[in-house]
Length: 116
Length: 113
Image (tube, rainbow over all chains, first blue to last red):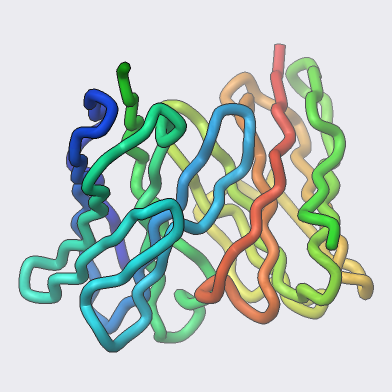
């Protein structure tokens, strides 16, 4: 079974500062990794995903993430945040084996608050 | 193209009642997944359907059930409601499987009194 740990439940930052949201996963088989964002009173939207290939993945709104297999991590970064980036961010994993690829396992989320 | 539509948006029920939530996926999407979201537990997987077949199920009691129709629309049902069932229920669709891009609805906020 796979699992995801988001190491910070809340991350406050100032506008235009860089940010890193941390995610570690656990799985005994190859994985697909995702970051989703949830704005208030909305569903989730995909920011980026890693399936294979280059370990540095670029997503929407200037976000990027790096897959590190040896550290089983998939941290999300943005060099300069805006007020509009305030939202909850979820890391998710699925595997390629059996029925597990028919579900995403999500972390508990990191609330990013960008202050002026 | 219309997004994922969930109805109703808000629902208030009392303990012991049952409830049915509806989800209309994006046109052409055949995979529909359901998640329960609570502040304490985050997003918990309920089940996933493809072509009217349940392919995977999460660790929820049998009071939680679902189905998918031939037009890919899906419903989930919760019987004998408990206070702990209060949550945001999210539906998501994708073309073939959740390991592609998932498109989420805005959810149904269920309150059990």
